[in-house]
Image 1 (cartoon, rainbow, N blue to C red):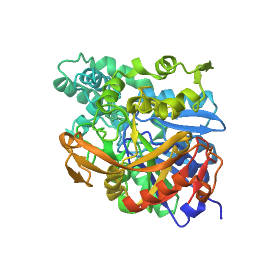
Image 2 (image 1 turned 180 degrees about the vertical axis):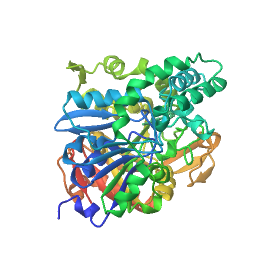
Image 3 (image 1 turned 30 degrees about the horizontal axis):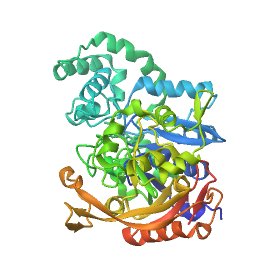
Length: 481
Ligand code: IMP
């Protein structure tokens, strides 16, 4: 039995969802399962607010809309953009162009006729509303996601299938002018702009819900690729600092035409032993607390170039890509600093924690087990730990096991109430750090003892089962437990 079969044996539908605030490395885990197991890879929620990074044969690719399994089309695998998604046609066609340039086939792509279309006025509204996170905006990705889902819920959204009936499209855009009085909408211009994109995707548009049901009956192996994370879910996240879809196992399954009950194995991804958040919203374990939140809200002003220059860390630009030693002595010094803000900067640099979609610096903090226990209550007990190699050189590892509320009451239940969550102070369990390179380890018993103890503690504390541990960006850098 291959290593991965220990996980996939007897499974027909596996979902990869995130148990934190997104950016946990779902792309890599999906990629492993897409390459070695799945027949079908389907996405059910969100749009190009996501950025799924995969490293294949040393080359990094970032997908925003297409499921990352698209690179296996030439092996006859099917990729589906599901009914729960919101699709920016220009971005989708751009990703298809890129596949054309790389001569990667995508004959087996299916786009749900029931997915919704992100219109130019959605993007304009989103950007205007979120002009400044510092002025109280939630810091969205500015891709029009929120306004598009708003129109869907208000029953005036535009389906992919509407693109092929001009009268319907015109009627719906005309109606939109009522709801976007502040935005100049030229119906004819939008229809003309959408036409070539619509023609381009037409061969791939299907009733994907029926296709999905057929595939289930045929016994095909189906991989659901989640987007964002549980704490960003409109249903379960830290509202209003959330995205506009339900990115839990429920929304992910519904978004491809299935029930969560149909999923044999939901795998919840957890960045460990640190985690990140982009955009505004409560983050109890954040290094440097409010100072870090405000600093990261400056977005591109504090991007990776700025931080490398500011902290005098040498870097090179190779083919437009920034290269630096993630374990450079200066980064380790920051990571082990007594100043929590600097510690956060060090971990951000060590983990290259800058948005795949927006390039914004991600806020960093220790992994929060109170929040994880809550996430497991929804997404189930099976967990994958990712980016575990990043903290090589950290003298200590901490995991938040409880909070104290307003310096007195001890709390071990997660709360979605923003005003309360902002006053929670984490209580940590401390474990010994590690200095060795763990990226080649394939058996968890060979991990440094501090890490092993921290993993054991996590499992017991949240009542979860760690199934895989990712120790580097490449597919093979993974421990199957
Ligand atoms: P929206 O999804 O663009 O509406 O943004 C809403 C919130 O979700 C913002 O705080 C974003 O930073 C966050 N967000 C959206 N997509 C992602 C993602 O893929 N990873 C992490 N955060 C995300």
